[in-house]
Amino acid sequence: MCIVPACDTENLLNLDSEMLDIDLESDSQTLNIGDTTAIKANVDYSANADVLVYEWNTNGGRIVGEGTSIVYIAPENTGTYTITLEVTDGKVTVRDEIRITVNIGHAIIASPNRYWQGNTFTQTLKYRLNVDEVFLDNIRLRYEILQETARTGAFLTISIDDTTIVRNRDIGEVQPDGPVLIADEVDVSSILQSSGVYELKLTLEIVNVMQDAWLLQKLTIIGVEGSLTEIR
Image (cartoon, rainbow, N blue to C red; front, side, top):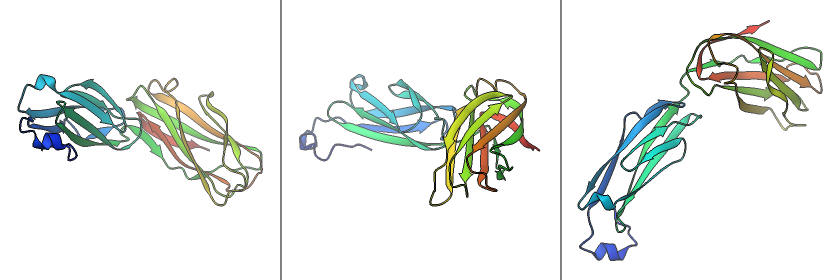
């Protein structure tokens, strides 16, 4: 595919303009979080390719390298990302792109759908976290909490083996119009460094005690494999 900018009438009339075409190919177009793939540009140019200038860009993840071959490092979030390459000889410019889908990969995913219960202002959910194998250096805990009927906010504390990773985080809203979803993640790499059994605690300091007010919808530990079971 040879592209000459439509507004560049000088190039359109210049019979001396060179023919330039590029085509991108990737070793893989489906990756897990943090994975890498090589992307190569096949360049067809009718003159000396030493004059060509290459500009790589992406809307997510990282690009390492330059010229006709780079390594793409998938980001920390799932989704579909576009890697683009623009090549020019100063007169003719061409552009091509390739899409990479990033999946969650190695992870423990649990949907407890458990309410914090009790008649006290401090309520805790406990889980036994069994890590069979660690796959990434950057291990992250994602949580999704629903403020279902609570009319005021709360304070969230998360700990693993009595090491606090989130302390008294202010969550929720005052007098919300409807249910409010709180979703966030925290780095737990310094704690989950090897396989083993850990105790995970999620504690809410609640301003107004109500039944079925706060719901733990989902927990995801990214970068490990294993299991998560509630301790009652």
